[in-house]
Amino acid sequence: MPRVDGDPVFCSLLNSNNRDEGIWRFELDGQVSARQEYIRNTPNLVTTLESSDGSAVQILDFCPRFERSGRMYRPIAWVRIVRPLRGNPRIRVVLKPMRDYGARLAETTSGTNHIRYLVGPQALRLSTDAPVGYIMEGRTFRIEQDTHFFLGPDEPFVGNLREQLRSMEQSTRRYWRHWVRMLAIPLEWQEEVIRCAITLKLCQHEETGAIVAALTTSIPEAADSERNWDYRYCWIRDSYYTVQALNRIGALDVMEKYLSYLRNIVDDARGGTIQPLYSVMGQGELDESTAADLAGYRGMGPVRRGNAAYKQIQHDCYGQIVLPSVQAFFDTRLLRPADERDFENLEQVGKMAWAMHDQPDAGLWEFRTRQEVHTYSAVMSWAACDRLANVATHMGLSDRADVWHERAATIARTIEDNAWKEGENGDGHYKASFESDYLDASLLQMVELRFLSPQNERFRQTFAAVEKHLRRGDHMLRYAAKDDFGAPETAFNVCTFWLIEALHLAGRDEEARTLFSTMLSHTTRSGLLSEDIDYVTGELWGNFPQTYSLVGVINCAGLLSKPWSEVR
Image 1: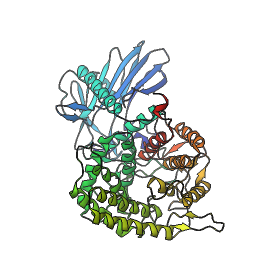
Image 2: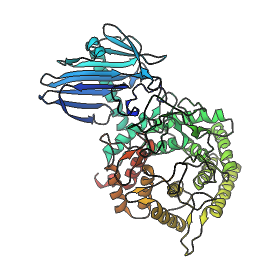
Image 3: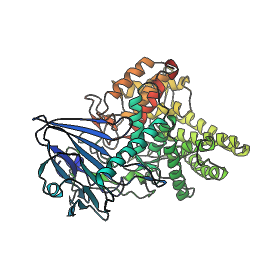
Image 4: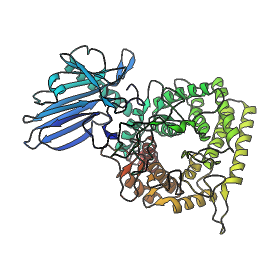
């Protein structure tokens, strides 16, 4: 509360084995099984609990989201409806939100049909037709009819609770189904793409348009690694990839809101340095600290709040602002097309890309103790200049087009002169940085960014080197070299998807499809992925759900799917 990057009131995931505080759970007396499924083409979740005596309940979870009175109704609220299915089910409601990052349970006050949880300056209110006393005292009670729970803003619930919540659920279901209906999905892997698209949309803070990298903090990248980071912020890089993937399947609403967020970031920078990440409200200072009262995921602390990466210099961000912004100059579907004033502002970002293309930075993997001129950052700077030249040409600004074409060509020569390493047997490769001879998976993005063609011999040689040195069975490392925390212990899921894309570009489609199917087999029961995976055991690690990973699913499905023309 009150936002995605705020105080986590339901934080039991980050508190070792203490699963009885910071949680909202329904316990069925004598429970022996549980199964879950989403209602088709929505994030609305249905859970069925069964007891040893044959009794059962069904729990419907959703967050209200629909248009009302000309505006989007999307309160910070959670609705749960418990329905008896068989027998005489008895449940206990464990509702214990915490405050101050797990420091203590929220105090409560109550009324006839509500409980207030004092989680901070903005309290939460539970409105319910269940017995309030049973909930507060943690007593087990029989469910004989549908029972309704609305946890949300500290406001009296107006209207009939049962009727209102059922109406909200239908409206929310209708909203999501209409949104999904507008997506241009591939023929194959439709359910997987839809689930990832819905989840990516849910990672957008709609008030400002910011897109967070993940919805959690401090799930370790590997066991006991202390690679625990707070991902509840908007990384310019991650958001670029998210918008790109959603744009490919026609989700323009996410892109338009995000472009509005970017315009505010650029305005605040006033032609100067742009940070790699910001809060969802555009705040720049995200001081990093630890939550001493939370033991961590499986006891693997620390739990961090804030992210010191905001202080880093990462020059790829300029390209990642220009690239999604360019579409607004060409796409006539948009509600707000870009104009010459927008081009002038975007040129300020391009000027920074030009100025910094050969300067050291922390790189996209955010090394905390070293800086080099990273090839990926330089290629992104080239892409910024190249795309600005395209826009200038489109707008008839030939003099500006010449400037940006010349700058792009200069950066390209710099990359070729400094990033390429010639091998002894003519089998060279691009390096991860101008200074060091090591490989990283981001080199596979040189085709995606159109710096190279798939047929380019230097790309073919680089792909071969990257695959040889970084591939671990069915998975791909970001890099194998030691970093601030030692050698990487897990594979980075989006890098495996980059590998799949490269296999497709190399004409190895069957191998790509097999590897893609393998990656999908690692998704959770909800059909989602975290950031990392143990390439030996297949266990997922890292923050969840990770936008990078979901982007990989969407992009690879689009590349590898059979065309619709085969069935229609």
